[in-house]
Length: 198
Image 1 (cartoon, rainbow, N blue to C red):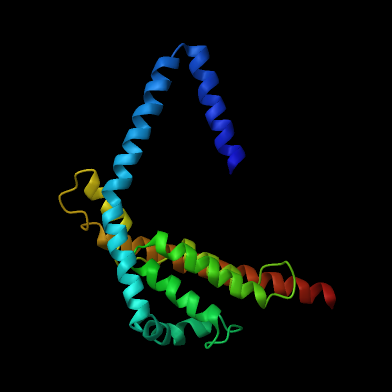
Image 2: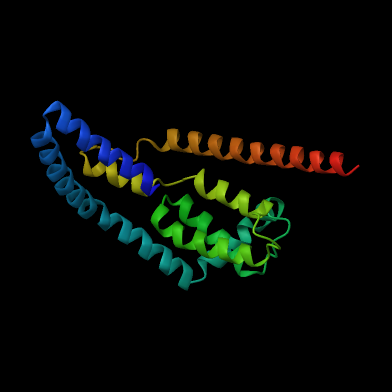
């Protein structure tokens, strides 16, 4: 990814030199840097509030209850993961954070869950559970799109949460298609392996 951004930055610089718009490029960089700082300050309050809520939820046992609530569904998605394991708990906590739209809070939980899943991987190849978890973390269902709402509010939206229905429909559709594609490709891969071995 660093190479991609490096090429984009170098390309913008070369193009501005050729077109004679180097002053505009410099002004754009400075303006964007200032806007980025203002945006960070604007959304940090809501992110801190919900991150604190997640910490309280963890300390008071709500996350454990959510883990038990998600257990019947997650058992089907992760049949090779023990429900009493740390990996299962971190997966549940990651899903809870994503449901609240807290991508920033979900990321460290996702990393911990992946590390725990990696401990049970016999090789360097990703297991089915690891692939499923990446899909669920990427195309996650968001009941409360906190980060997006904070961004919309910072840009002057009068009703930042009026996108709820669209977010629910798109996130459920994206996750369903991702999991379906994963299951179909896994079955096809296993069928090919069994066909070659026979």
